[in-house]
Length: 261
Image 1 (cartoon, rainbow, N blue to C red):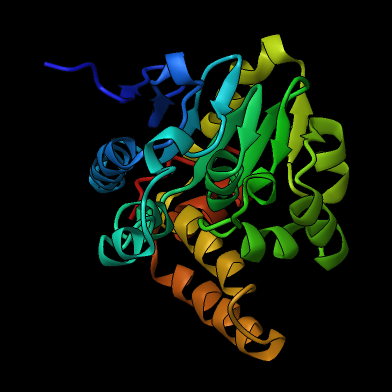
Image 2: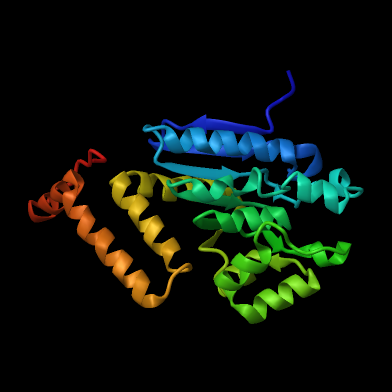
């Protein structure tokens, strides 16, 4: 059997956290259809697993994912990519994951690698990370959301400059622009990413998923619609046992014991 392109480990510490690792080290984790299909299946399984509350996605120290597999697609025709529904068929699967996705990025996150990181809910970057959308340098454009998620994260001016020049963006510049939540020393990346995941996983899962859903709605709706959606989801938490437990624990000055219900 061929080696898995996506490794999955359900961690004991921190609890309720799964670690997903891209596993194509010889090509710096270049993303291809086979990896995308395997990733989609494994993310769906983790999303359905009641023992997993948060998913951390990472690559290697050298590369989170250094883009799509250009060698594989170099001679494809329009008919090939259109008829096969390239990208949409498998890569969009991450959008349907209800639990938080944290991208722990070290080294290169370019092209599709940068775009996949942006599909995650939080990006924590090592200080050696490099982001970018270099598609323009090979005669094409981003296809996994680079021209859509990038402006929402960093604004039109920076997205235009980054996508039109194809230059690499340092972790520090990405953090200053709002693309990255936090930059940490490279040797502390996984420690920090897993600590963040563990913190989130310790809270009520329904409440966590509602936070993710409401923040994502902010990019799809008007402010008035978004506020109404947030208010309804806030009201809905009062149907949760975890809301009762959390507030009682606060009043009683003790740590809450969430049951995720």
